[in-house]
Length: 638
Image (cartoon, rainbow, N blue to C red; front, top):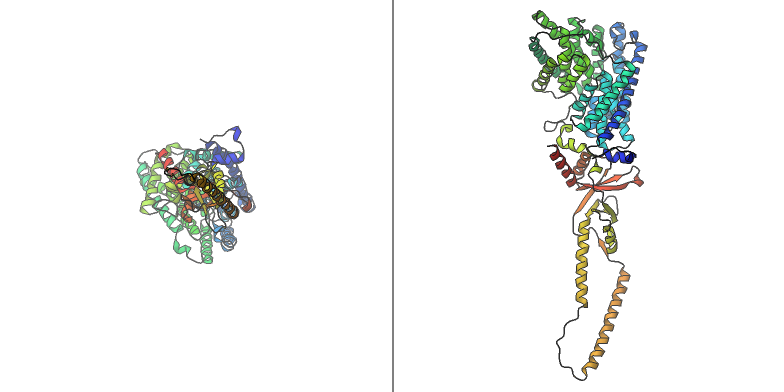
């Protein structure tokens, strides 16, 4: 088990410990650091929003679109769409346009949690422009992307193994949500349920620490107040449970509409300039009549909870903000949807509550209660994240007594969106056998461990042809594999089992010993009676034979000197040989498994180093080693 001790404080030792599946102390240290970094970044991002609001919004409030003149609030979304369209969608390549939560999940799925710097920079200004520009957008998506990418960047800077980068991405995500909403528990659950899509003890603890640190930093700067004001409400009669279930069913249908519009291929197939024009006109038209749909909408959400919005405005928020947000995403403008989804759910819940009061004035609960539950139901249905929605409901309202009806609403709305509307989570776009790649059990198990934890380090390197003495010298180190260097880079690197070479040398030595024994053995001659002249004749013949043998031996030695030592071709030795492909020391077992399949080889040699001339081979990892690890880990879990 990996342990944190004072005797192993070097960075190389830290990296080796992180390669294992149970490097919990090391990950907790990284969780604290990444939480502090993300919390600081969120303070900077919110400060940018406040600075922009101080320049262009009444009272320096980034949500005060209602106080702006009609013409100003119409022009703002036109300018915002133009800036994002020209500077991001028009001038930059497709890969650089990806930002937000979907980008975080994509990088975690296909790139082991490594983020490009260009996208991270784009997220800063696009997040500020979309919120202050009057589009229906939140600040949670930028918070998640900025925190996750910064945390992953720390791991890359320290050259940590890629299995730890996955945990760092979750830490940055949790700290970003925690700092945005002031909801540390919801941040943890969101990171594990929506981004990581798995729950492990090793993953939970560092993510919890990161979420705590993120919330701590923002509370030190902005205080411990929640994101919006919440009234004191109670459900009262249990009769409201039935109406809450009906409300949740309706919200589930709204979530289905939202996801289908956001994923509309017909809209995405339009020309870019046409999509930008349509979004700008749609946002400007709604802003003229209903400025409440602009921005994040937390002020409107708070007013809905206190019953301060008219039915007309609630309808505009439920229908107008829903269609505007989804249509903006469908047109390719990367806005954050989490904040707007909460506002849409609260407006829908308030409308159901008002209708309930009209039907049963004596038994119906306050519409504000339905608005609270509605925002959790909408969040849970759109993201397919029931636990994250419930934790957000608890931490945003500080009313634990509404968890019971909230649980019912989240389940009903989630089932409606998933089964009736055929919608998966908003951020799940690719599935294999009914599961997202991050949910595949094999990939989950292999992504938790890096190559150094499983690779075989006992190896020696040699050229293809060696003499017998050199071969014996290679075996003196008791290696498991012999890496055969090829004459050119276009030929595949090969590995030979050291035991096969040792077996061949042993068999060859035995054959050589038998040959020498047969040569030195004299043929037996039957005894006969010696004649008087035989002794003299035999003596002369024996001397001549000995001279001939000595001459033959001298000739053989001269030939051997001319030929040089007898070289062995290691490619001709009978035994197990593997075609090898390279992989980096930081890679996870899932990367190694994918490389094996793509390269169609039997093993990988693990490279260590970053400069071409300074790379060295640290070990060999085979398909059998990966399969043994997976079987062992699977058996230990079950």
